[in-house]
Amino acid sequence: MMLRINRESDEEVLLRCAESLCVAARTAPKGKGRDLLTTLILTGSDKDALALKMKEIAQRDALSFFERDAGNIQDCMVIVLIGSIKEPLGIPHCGFCGFEDCAAMSAAGGTCSFNSTDLGIALGSAASRAADLRLDNRIMYSAGKAAIELNLFPEEVSMAYAIPLSVTGKSPFFDRAH
Image 1: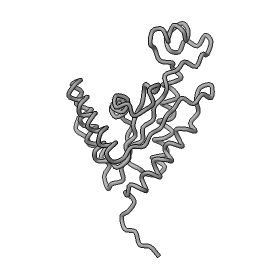
Image 2 (image 1 turned 60 degrees about the horizontal axis):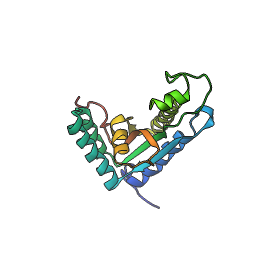
Image 3 (image 1 turned 90 degrees about the vertical axis):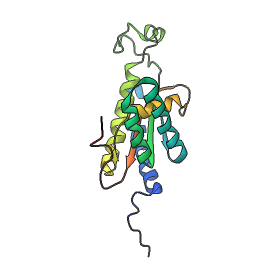
């Protein structure tokens, strides 16, 4: 027999939950069936480095919400990061990106609409899984941008978001200062 009291917020439990969020992102539908996603799970000193980078960006770019979000990252044990490679899918006559074709979009440094749409669907799927598990969570652009600047992802990943996870009596992601 084993007695565990209030252990639901242990890092080991949250890591298993984070893995299931990554699975949900991976299995989300993707344009042309092309999987351009990369998932990461951060804890410990890697998570702390992410929060520090967010504070640096807040100061550098005068974006106070990065500082606020960094506090949330510091207060969580586990962070899920989901990023996408920026690669056109080559769908003829698509134009969803606002350019005539994929060549024009690539030449202008644009982003294929399917890349960002697939990332959004994967994030929704992962956040839905977090809700299924009753985990406090929030999708954060700020932490994703900091992860890109820290080169946590492979070089070809150019857009990312984070989903910090919390298991506390009150979600740290609500009633936040602006």
